[in-house]
Structure formats: C-alpha cells, structure tokens
Image 1 (cartoon, rainbow, N blue to C red):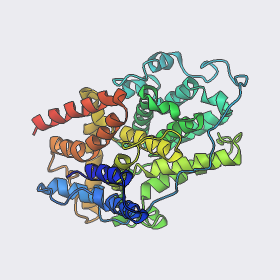
Image 2 (cartoon, rainbow, N blue to C red):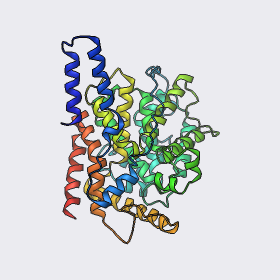
Image 3 (cartoon, helix red, strand yellow):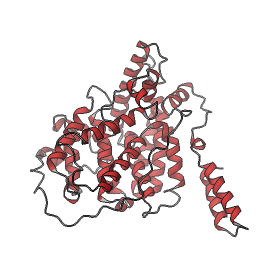
Length: 409
C-alpha cells in the first residue's frame, strides 16, 4: 500500500470517534515514524548497476542529513505603501531593447535561454533578473536601490564559471525563467508576499553560484577545502549561500539596505532554506515531505506551507530540463553529460572510481536520462501537477521526453 494512502487512513482514523487522547497521540507517533526521511529513500532494489551506482553517489542515500534552519514563522507578510517609482522605465535599468522584446515571451515554456544569452552577449542572467524584478514591481514595492541591484546581479553573474558546460550562468538564468513561469502560471502563487517573490527569484539566480563543475560526492572524496569547511554536509549548497551573503556585504551590493531587521532575517532564512533544498541528497526526503504537507492539505496562511511551495518551485526548476520542449531538453542533456565526463576525467586523474554515467569511454545518454527522469524529475513534477493543475503541462512534457529517451535505448 502506498505510504500516502496509509497516511490518509491514519488521518481519517484520527478524526473519527477514537476512544481516548492516547489513541490520537499514538496515531501522531505512527505518522511521524512513517514520514521519517528514510522511508522516502529510493528502495535498494535497482537491478541496473549504473543506475544504482548513480543514485548512491548523487543522492547519497546513507549520508547523514541535517534539518537546516526552519522557515521563519515570525516574519509578517511584507506590506508596502504606494511609493513614487524610483525609476521610470526599463530604459533607466538599461535593459537593451532587443532583450526587452524577447523577454516579453519569458513566461512561455519554450522560451530559449540560449538565444537570450546570445542576444545579450553572455548576460542573460543579469538582464532577465532585472526585467523580472521590474515586471513584478519589486524594486519599487520593496525599495530596492537600483544601483545596488545592478552591482549585485553583475557580481553574481560574474562568479558563474562559463567553462562549465552545464553549471554556468545560462543554467542559472534557465532556473530563474522557470521559477518565474511557475509564479505566473500557478493559481496558488498569489499567496506569496512580495518579499517571498524576491527571495525566490534571487535564490534561482544564486543557487549554483561559483559551481566548480563537480558534485558533492567528489568534493567529499577529495577532501576539498569546502568539504572540510562544511563537514561534508550539503557542501556546494552551503558554499553557494555563503558566497551570496558575502556579496550582499560588499560595497554597493546590499540590495536589502532599506529592509527592517525582521525582513532581512526572513530573507536570509528563506534563501538558505531554498538553496539547501537543491541538494539532491535531500531529494527523496523533500518529495515525501511535500506529499505529506501541501499535497495533503495546503494552508495558505501557514508560512511553512508557503515555504514548501517555494522549495518545490525552485527544485522543479533546478531539475526541470526534461519539462522543456524536446529540442531544449536534448541540449541540456548533452551539456550535463559533458560536465559529467569532465568530472570522470578528474576522478581517473586522482585514482578515484569513476562515477556512474561519468566515464566518457562508456557513453549512454539515453540510459542516464531515463534514470534521471524516473527517479528525480518525474516524482517532483508529479507533485507539482497535483499541487496546481495549471502546471500539468510541465508533467506532460516530462512524460513525453521520457518516452523519447526510452525509445533511444
């Protein structure tokens, strides 16, 4: 029997005519045990050696987990009064007209981030974020200093390593565009405050800042400075957060200078929770939590539920290449494979066992994609489509692309 069905039966039993409070407490205890992270781990029955190896290395099922910070339950919705705009138009934000014209289609699922990168001379992330901050009127509503916003975004973009085939500023822009698509298409995103929208958009921009092109497992095995600093826990994700807040403390980059102490703390707590949620080793636990919270009962007045929705949006966007139209999905699949091969080369160089799907002498693109979609992407997009039927088209694309990769094996 599926875990979700068991949870539903328990909830029904709890709300029924139970004999005493002890029974109710026992139900709560059983529910807590069932929703323990380990119950959502992928079962160790995968017969395919490569897929099993990839899941163990990437998802790192047996690694210790950390709960991280709780979403702030004290932060009040950010309210703004009518203020005079700090700028008059996108011209004053210095977004080129050719970019503005193409960004008018930014809410389309087939929006081509690679084309955007070309027409902006490699500054797709910078101009897309400026455009979206303007589109949601966040610069004015949240009193963001325009100069600081520009300096901040320039610095963020510059720290992405363009030598990475996959984890570069184009990927960050793609995640940003996809997160915005969810915000605009979802009926339930209206429950987010302006501050929530800002955090989510910025988290998309910074979630892989200065990514080294290798995964957490490689960092751990090599005992890198980052691995030692963060004690092997969400190594890269902690690093991305740290880099972001270091930039915010840099002269001319503090976009939060007009915020109250409470709102600054809310921004910090929220961004950390969002970026840490992109650690793929937390994938199954987070999917399980989504199923047990906002998919069972979404309470728009519950800040933790809003936080879970935002996590789902960012995680889906981060692994959302299979939700794109097939031509774009294939480009991303080829790029991530090239980055895998580069890590495999480093593993050979340092005498490490080459990770699954990272040996360029054993190419199997279709197999790696079907495994990724089945175990990572599709479970998340199942949650997304169930949460909001307006986003069903994303799951439809995932299923269509899965059929394509299956046919290529």
